[in-house]
Image (cartoon, rainbow, N blue to C red):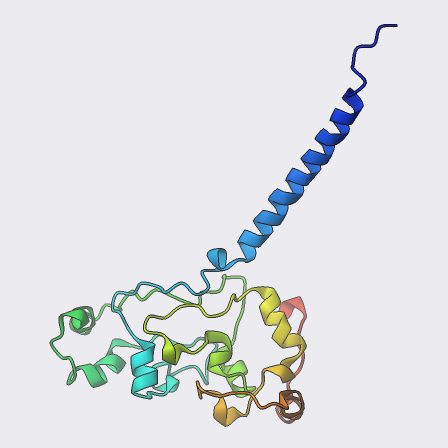
Length: 216
């Protein structure tokens, strides 16, 4: 019987299958890296705002406490975006006619809120409670980074589920004294594991890793 395929056909078929499997693996691996990369999470990307608000100037240079603007952070799941009147407490006197602050004055005149761009915007299926974390000794800078050094605010951490679970599985690595939660310059001690373990006991912190903790 005549041979339809040359002797090299088997080798070509094997190499073709290996190449196909390799290409699929490369595509899958590349897609995973892209999804987990700052390009996808927008980590480290400054966000444009209607007014170029500088945390570096307000929280850093002027030393304004986070709670002056984000008034609900200790009592609510949501750290509120400051109302126009809070801004105008100062800016009715300082930079009162600066063109860059016209959107702020217009908001006060019309009663329409400024359309600020959310920087830390979790998906709707994720539940996060600011007050619980604050009362359990998780500092602002742990999640938000050194905003007191950001002229324009960006997302400092990836906010991926794995990143959250790293803390939930071992909270002793991240917890700090409650009176240091709003201290942007706080540095954990060298014996953080020991200090953190003591605070975990004192604050009755649980290592919550079940799905229903965040997905409700």
